[in-house]
Image 1 (cartoon, rainbow over the protein chains, first blue to last red):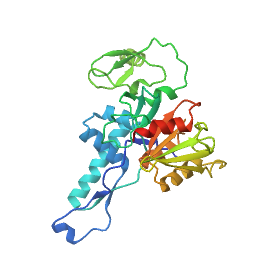
Image 2 (tube, rainbow over the protein chains, first blue to last red):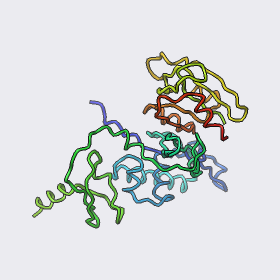
Image 3 (tube, rainbow over the protein chains, first blue to last red):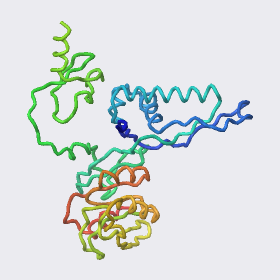
Image 4 (tube, rainbow over the protein chains, first blue to last red):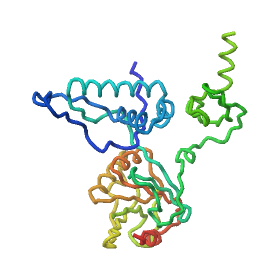
Length: 197
Length: 106
């Protein structure tokens, strides 16, 4: 049996540099093998510590589960720590990833476009130059599933806040609008409570 | 800045091609010199991986914007990693000269 395939991690863009090199005393005896930080580990560190998202929010951004995100993040810290302590270089390359970017819509010429220069904010439409641009979720249009009626609710595991469940979107990918906690399907929670009692 | 537009024919009033990898022609438009170049797509009959080969061709031409009706799932990450901007026009009746006029604000 073949092993389970890794889910591709969504990375918003490559890092601005290819790696880090130490300076000072220890560089005299250059250690040949650098620590290889994967793109997904760099992205995990960026989301968690630079963008200051919590692990659940960051895992949704990268398109992996929360435990997987935490493992990627822990590996990133471990690699950076070993590079610091042993005075080794860090090279950022490789990883099971795909690049993704935000999409926008222009109201004047009704075109859709993405923004490959992530540092610059989008101010005008690249096609017609209009200022009438707004953010746009690409996934919403590609979802071909017909609208199912669901009376279920997603409930926050931290504060208990409830929102109506959206068909086709797993509850564990929802983020609580009040406390940014992880959400679960209400039925599942009730069921597990019954089991305990 | 150079933009590549997918076209169904090699005249200015041809329609925008709704496919990216398997379009008939590319129109490479340089907004600085206002030069227009029609490029027949050599990969349109390829069975697999047309999108990838097309991106390599466009990168060698120095294109940094592509305009088409749709981009496939495989080609989006490739364009993203080359930092090429994608513009989608979901209007099959759009003509090349109309799009070139829109780009005139550069």
